[in-house]
Structure formats: structure tokens, C-alpha cells
Image (cartoon, rainbow, N blue to C red; front, side):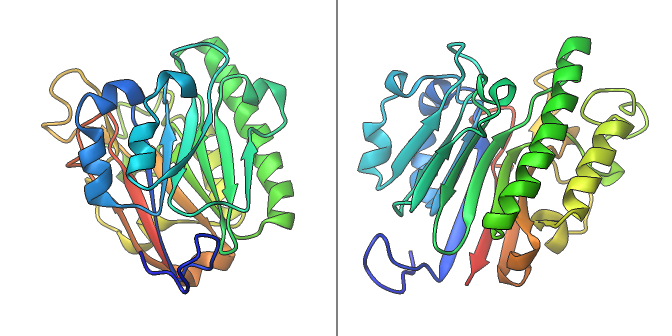
Length: 267
């Protein structure tokens, strides 16, 4: 890591941020997750769908690899949950949003550094009518939460599983999936407004090409055939735009039905 000084509380001149929906951190650890983490060596790793309480995870593995770790789990065991691993000690950690219907499922955690604040987000999926209603409520309230937060913390990086494909280029079959949650016009319109409200989709900012996805169904050999969806993002607030040096998707990581996404910032 390139630090301007050797103190953990010092200012970074480079930050590599990865985000990964692991579909269960305990299952991922059994699939050699730690070897991947040590080889990838992010400064910050945002995790979603951890499906575990902190005390259910062998966190000593992360500490041995040089990471501080912060967990915000769902009240329901084995469900949802987010976490952030970081080499540098944050100035502050914010668990949740303070909005009860958003927080009981453990979907938002934030760490603040001098350079920026990083959020790990796990936006709900719309698997049925009731969950779709919950998803839309979450989306609206998250928008208001971020609009307020940006006034105090303008340098935001919001990483995570948004459970929405933004554009037709972000899904393998936009025609057949236009009535499926995750690619509904209303969901796409919300994400479009959210991004245009002051964020950069860091991957699309640097990568205009098609056929790049971050999630594949376990069915019908979808991943081998690259029939995927790009629903995981590293959205970077506009004041940080000129610091974006790289942004990418890492489909070679196979611990989950998702793969990691990343952004690198040079300050």
C-alpha cells in the first residue's frame, strides 16, 4: 500500500476498493476466500450478503491478513448482512442509516476516512410483490438518506449489490428480462436518477464495452455461457471523479454467484 506516511491514521494517496456479494461469508471462506483476499490486497473490501453474525465468523483470519473489520448483520440469522474490511483504521464507522425498515435486515454500513467515505450497500431484491414494494420503499428512502449525507460527506463511494441493471448493455437479454425485477423500467429509472443526482458509475466511466457482468444464475450453466447481469456497482460521487484511475469487474473469482467489482482512486 502507498501511504503518505506510515501511520495507519495517515492520509492515503491511493485507495483500492473492492466490493463483493459473497452469498455467505462462511461458505466463501470454505472456498479459499482468504487466498483470494491476500492476492487481491484491497485497501477496503465491502461485503454484502454475509449471512452471518460477527461472532459466527472466524474474524482472526482477517486480522492475520492485516484487516480491521466492521459488521452490520440482519436481525434474522443467516440472512442478508453487510461488512467492511479495511487496512486503515477509519475515523468513524456508521452502522445502518437510522431508518428502522432499512436497518433490521443489515443492508448499509459506512466507514469514514480523510479522503472519502465508503458505503457497503445491499439493496433488497424484488423476489415477490411484497418484497418489490419493500425494495421501492428502500430505494426512495436510501435516495433521501444519501441526499442528506452528501451535504456533510460529499466524497462518497457507494459500493455494493444494487440488484438493478442500469442499461440494456448491463444484461445479457434485455428484451426477455424487461418484466423481471432487477430490470424493471421503474427500477432502472430510479438508478438513473440516483446516478445523475451526483454519482459516476465508475465501471462504465472507463469501460464502454458490452458483455461485462457481475452476477449469474446458478441455473442453465449461465456463468459458463456468460448470461449475466451487472448489478454490482462502485458509484463514486462527482467530487471524486478526477481521482478515478481504474475500475473493473473480476469474474475469475468463484466464491459466489456474484463476482467482485473494484475501483481505484489516486488522490
